[in-house]
Image (cartoon, rainbow, N blue to C red; front, side, top):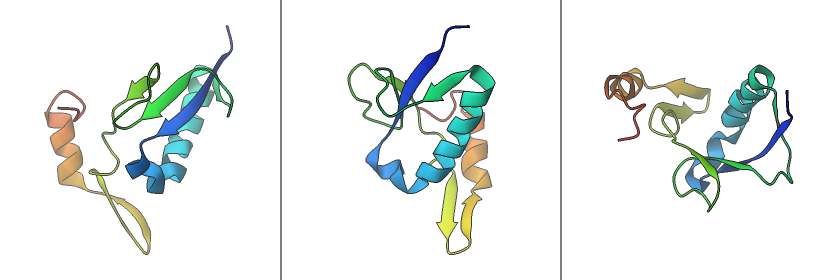
Length: 92
């Protein structure tokens, strides 16, 4: 299997969720034999306004599907259910 390297890019509004998004990226890396590296030419961008040439991933869970407080990050069930019911992953 060919090695696939990528650089993770986030929309500025999603920076507060970087630890959670990187945790999900860890799963992606392990499950699909891809690796995040800081200087990869391929860019995987999470959220709106992807840079030119990037692989865009719509932000479905963050920020609308969660709330944060002093105790951590929590799902917002109605928002997540609405995204699933839309049938398009909540992307519009």
